[in-house]
Image 1: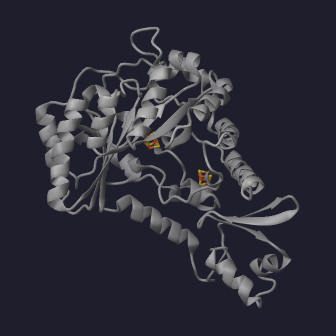
Image 2 (image 1 turned 30 degrees about the horizontal axis):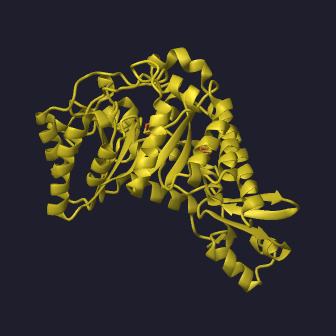
Image 3 (image 1 turned 90 degrees about the vertical axis):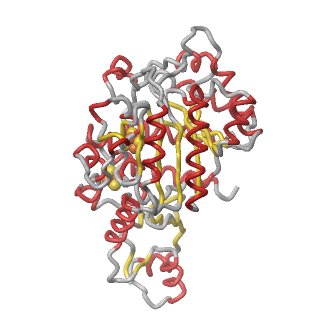
Length: 422
Ligand code: SF4
Ligand code: SF4
């Protein structure tokens, strides 16, 4: 038996702990266990058994790296699930300064809807269909969404396929009537962005008609979603211009006492020239790692997330855009891998009307061929199973330093240990 390559050993309050990034296991080690792990005392059978069960020790001939690789490629090419992000239109009622999308007024036509249904029908061997409604603002397109959902559910019923749906919305139009409709349309969770307390949010998440309180409408929308049994995934975009206000926002969210929310802090990034004028307010990945952890701690103290969220989660693959059966589809039926690309027709790799799934193009391949296993640093990195190299799109654009990632992981683990027995 040997110690797992994916063990990260660290000290906390004078004791030695080990976290295994492949199994997501964390344990404190006394001298006896430490000796066994380091191969000094193989005869303590009980200690060895426990360390093996949790993945801290593995068979001598097990190639753990190959098993991470195998899981990654299984995830990439798995054919049981089809995931599609549908953008019925890029039209939006907001005009956020950092928005990367190229707004057009085109909405999905009857013909494109028919092509979309035929496209889905060509996947005869799936057992799960995962749909995400996106835009523009998808709540402006509920009629089309209703129609497509009805057809997709027919397909699922006839073929014994499980149907799941989610939505990304700015939340402004969420009324009792719309929320009830979303429930009927089997939307299980809606991602809504809140960018700061009222004054800040209203400036950043601006309605096209000026001086509208979009913040209060969003909070009301979240409450309505929860009343109807739909989870709200609150995304908080953070950059240098709003970072100081996020703690106050968290206090406001905590006071609302929502029933079913998740929180996610996101780094604002520049993907297009359209964002160039706000570019210097963005944080680097390294800066953001530290800020995110501090904000998460605050969220934990306010009861907005639980302590387990500080344990890094093992992933087989970082993002759906790397998978074969994962598509983002624009209003004209144009196909993309990453949903941030929709509308930039030069980045589209085809159209659902004449999609040739077996003939991959360079644009599609640039996402599909992405893998951490061609990067020397990732191959030799103990964080690989919890990182998987990150966002493809970003990796194509910039080279990042990973030292800060390790520090952030260790600090998160120490925070977990400090609070997990409370
Ligand atoms: S991107 Fe960095 S942290 Fe992630 S697996 Fe590669 S080397 Fe490790
Ligand atoms: S490639 Fe990056 S930007 Fe695109 S969906 Fe994946 S994580 Fe998001």
